[in-house]
Amino acid sequence: MSGRKKPKEQKLNVFFRVDSSHQMGTGHLMRCLTLAEELREKGAEAIFICRDHPGNASQLVRDRRFCCHLLPAERGPMSDEDASGYDSWVGANWEQDAADVIEIIKGCDEGGSKKLLVVDHYGLDSRWEKKLRSHVNYIMVIDDLANRPHDCDFLLDQNLYENMNERYRGLVSEHCRLFLGPEYALIRKEFREAKKKMKPRTGEVKRILIFMGGTDPTNETTKALKAVMMLGRLEIAVDVVVGAQNPHRHQIEEMCRQMPNTRFHLQTDRMAELMAEADLAIGGGGTTTWERCFMELPSLVVSVAKNQKAAAEYLRRTGAIEFLGVNEGVDPNVIKNVLELYATAPQLVTRMAKQCMTVGVGRDHVAVMILGKICFA
Image (cartoon, rainbow, N blue to C red; front, side):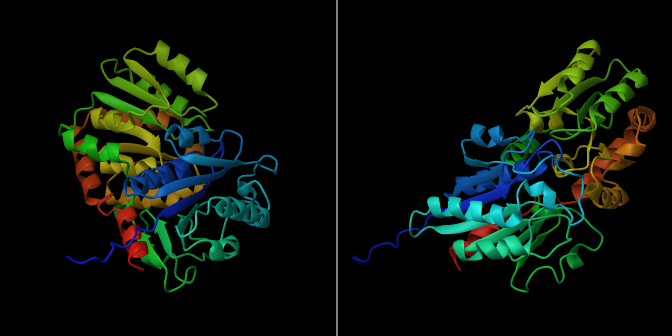
């Protein structure tokens, strides 16, 4: 028997630089949490670095037992888009932000551990990443804008676009490994488990799920509820989900209380179960789009941010969703008319569910691929 010792496994620390707020929503944070949980299951330690923006959802990070460093937001209210893009979304000068993150990474250095930095932030680009390059072993970017250069080893864009394979040409180096398309979508474990137990949908609309994103600042949820009331189909059950940071949550809860056969869910951990139970969804065009497609849930989609429109339009052309348009042009009447069509045409509902399957959401596990590249580098 050989006396050779088994090599000691090198620990992997994964640092997530991601923010959430009333304006940014919670989608960026939620997809990072999904990746963090997958990596933790495989032995990595995840550390989140966030800024204390108004309406941030950093408590979700702590609720899931991850370390979260909350940096002060040094700037005032964020504009939708300033002259340089999304710079103001950072909440600090980008150089100061980089210095703050470097200090946290140094403070977590245990000696000998590998470090992966995951950046999911519209306000950060290659300038910031270059500052961090010498302090970590690998950098991963999660993006869907394709509007700025990156200095990274991995890039994930889980959205579906017509020119998907060309979008990052010239924005990343040749050595960067690209994960492009919904097959790489970050799907939480509970959705995979719920799908296994899900009953086949008949096309008949008996239950509707409404979820317009974690914050829904323009109150699209109320529009959807008014549309359901106008439909007048009291036999259809309705589940309404809002995030804890939704500024209209009390108004929405009161509306739900007054509507028959309607349940209100605040910051629920039962989203996968609710999607499995629903026959039709009314939702935003953010990251939840891919969870709905994964669950083969036919959806009426409203774009609640400018960057959601292109992906929603392309997904509509595949037949996997019914895209109602950008929120400014969508009122309760628009939603009600389309809702009425699908509520009386089971064949349209079943056709959309089948098209959801063709999108191929979540077929490949990004965490496994990344770990493979890191561990065998």
